[in-house]
Amino acid sequence: MLEKIREGSQGVIAKTILILVILSFAFAGVSSYLGSKTTVAAATVNGEEISKAELEQLYQNERNRLQQQLGEMFDTLASNDDYLKSVKKSVLERLVAQKLVDQAASNLNLTVSDAQVKQAILSEPAFQTDGHFDNDRFQAVLRQLGYQPAAFSESMRVDMTRRQLVEALIGSEFALKSEAKDIAELQGQSRDIRYAIVDAEPYKADIKVTDEQAKDYYDQNTNQFVRPEQVSLDYVELNAADFANKVNVSEEDAKTYYDEHKNQYQTTEKRLPAHILIPFGDDEAAAKSKIEAIKKELDNGADFAELAKKDSQDTFSAKNGGKLDWYEQGVMDPAFDDALFKLKKGQVSGIVKSEFGFHLIKLLDEKPVQTQAFADVKADIEKELKKRKADDEFYSLQQKLADTSYEVPDTLEDAAKAVNAKVMHSGLFARNNPPAVLNDPKVIKAAFSEQVLDQGMNSDVIELGDNHVIVLRVNEHKVAGTKSFDEVKADIVARIKQDKANDQAKIKAEEYAASIKAGKPEVKLTTKANVHRYDRELQLELVSEVFKLSKPEQAPTVGTVELTNGYAVVALDKVNPAEGINDAVIGSLQQQLANNFSELDYRSLIAYLKSKAEITYAEDANEISELQ
Image (cartoon, rainbow, N blue to C red; front, side, top):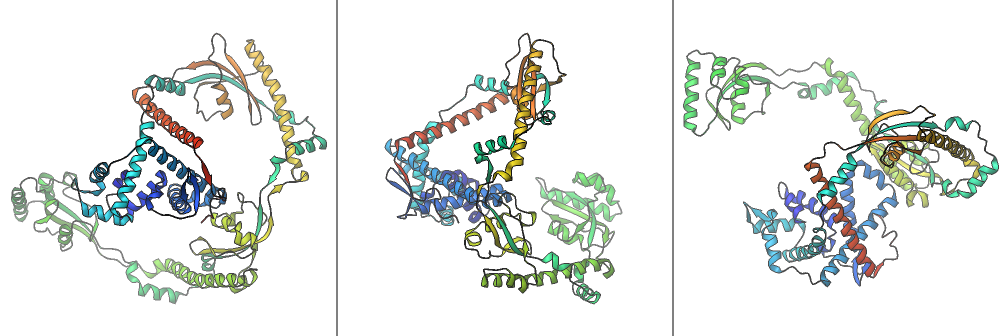
């Protein structure tokens, strides 16, 4: 937790630290810090309760973390209530694990003294200013986090005690260099092979499948033919983009807008300067004397560009005679900027002092403010006015749609009439295959919600994008069930044909394999050298088989493998040693192995503690609580 606070101690404390600590809670499961108590338990671990309030707090934190991590993908996942239930269930298991570790630490009499807690707080950089503990900063951070000092100290004690046990366990894991080296060499090796594909497709033509065979397959595999829950929807859609195409804007309206907003169609004045820079260095007085001497040379008629090349210490511009770039007002250092925009073309400024040093500035050229002609911007203005009018109409109709669909919740006809739209209809679809117009996580969630599906009411207004909304209601609902034999007969026939064709391809592949082992291949083999474990040019099943074959001795090692549409026969000719295995690769792999071992240790610890514990869950443990 302190590591997260430390990372967030720079910048806007109120927001950054709060976000990082929330994420820390999501990982560490320290919702008990919040001090929230309730008589309603989500679970009980050896007589100690985990409240539903604790669970809900951590669950919301986990949702926030996932949303930040996954972005738009989370919206798609969150449209499925089963996914959210699985997230909440994993959060509860995390809380149970935390409780078990705390109890184990207590049983082992592990403690953290007041002095240790105090030292941890005093040494925490998030609470320091210029390397020293700052009590005012400490109090400010705690206020932002909603803690009292005593409660925070106690939360530190709990966290530090828990870490004594966990770190003592996982911190003892290590991986030998020889282990890492062996694994690196296995992962990095490549293999030289020859292979042939036996395509199953040609065998299908002669395969006949009877109705009886198909029905037997159906009866024995009914679990493969489950129909997902499906709905068809009625919906009313409003999109401001559609209104814009119907809006007319007169030339008079466009001209009036142009006259009232002419400043929007003006270019910004720009100036092209050159300068001579003498930085302060260690002696500002010497720098000033130097720039004064250069100014005197200029006053006596010296060429600015030549002096810049010779004396300016801005080496990048000096080689171009001090020439810089075009600048708008307000871009450069304030003193430089002020002097530049007071000059006339060809004029040289007096000595200007900026944060970079002393300057002499010459105005080489200028681009004055110019106003675009109405004819040049007319089309853009008309487009903007159409959009504004369309948006105004959209906002008005959106409110009517919301009001009417709510007031008359058992039909969309009245709502459609109120906004001069049509009620549209969709075919039946499941959660995972909605039509394009309805393919939005919020629409899917609403379509299968209790309000729409069970109560038969109109949905709330759903935002699909900027000024684009929809209201929907269920038209037809089909619960999940088993498809009839007639619905899936064609698919079953195709499956049986594929299986039988694959069987024949397997026989042929085994014949080819035998001929290769005998040294008289009956099939033309394709040669491929240096096949790696993650080769993407060959089918995954083929590559997997290649690395299952034993190292060849005097003759190639031969095997067969089933593919999606047929079989392959493969001969392993040579195993090539890994390349590029150095100490850095081995060291990195050692660390990965140690981390994996530590993770396994932690999981084993939790599994052991669970096996010895008495854990009871609330009656609604499968659903945990109503999803928010």
